[in-house]
Length: 378
Image 1: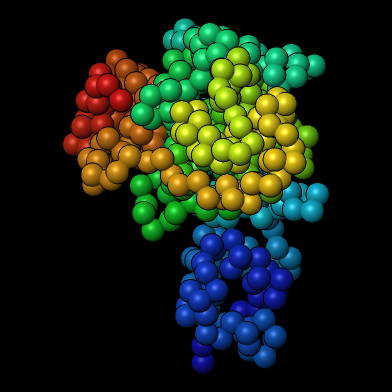
Image 2: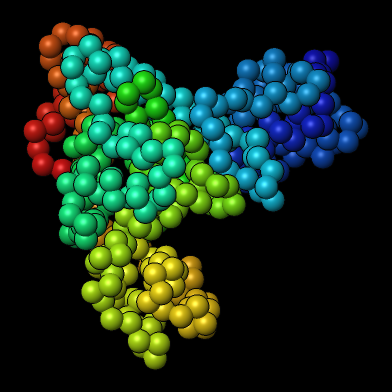
């Protein structure tokens, strides 16, 4: 007779919730789930092991009387109806843990090697307004008062400036290199970590370029304020998130630059579309920035917001196929981190197996191909 185990219904619900499987996938994998929840039947030991595997949990945690949510080491600013979200999906948790390991090594190595910390970290005083902080950050990134991301890839323009300033910037839409484990943009947009005088920004790239650019600028706000945290759409009522959102809008749409543009109530939708592309932001974000600056009346904005809200098309370049794997790795871990790992490896300070693990590659040949990209332009 098969060995059965007792899993409390609330523990079962929590475990499958963190597995990030869809309802259909759960039903297919565990057709007796409703019986387990009701107590009519108990899962067998092999079935319990499959649940633990799906939830990426040790079996023992399924057998505890209550759920045991994972704690993360950074503040979670995501809320729903002003209540803090306690659920951290397995994918997000692993991404945070990997980023913490990378930053931990980098901060220690950088301090020992004399690598300068980022100037922009903590550049905003505790009493600084988002506008004041954005202007300070703008100067630190090498822009004049009207400067903002430009070029065909505005995300990379800002990424490069942040990395040149000393920040680690990592971007990905999946866990590591696993295409089967996609990151959910509805769960989080990005996060910021800090280790001593150094910091890391991660942006979820499962979104349009305009959303990625705003998320990147938002996380830079966390850096400027020296407040690490996990960000998402659920945190819009949080004071820190509101501050960082305003910082991002000010950084990406500087008042000096936008006042040079003309906006007319009768042609507002067309003007928004053309101007938003030049600044790399969504039409809705631009619209409310114009209202804030008094360049568009609130009643005119309310009239057309429904026409532009959520309808921005990603400004991604037309796909020409996936880039080579080493290029993908460089993009995911960031130029600064890759450069530092490469230098440490070549100098003998970091063993090749450790370097491969930090970069998420499996063999020496791939490691060498990735490290060879250090001197190539991004």
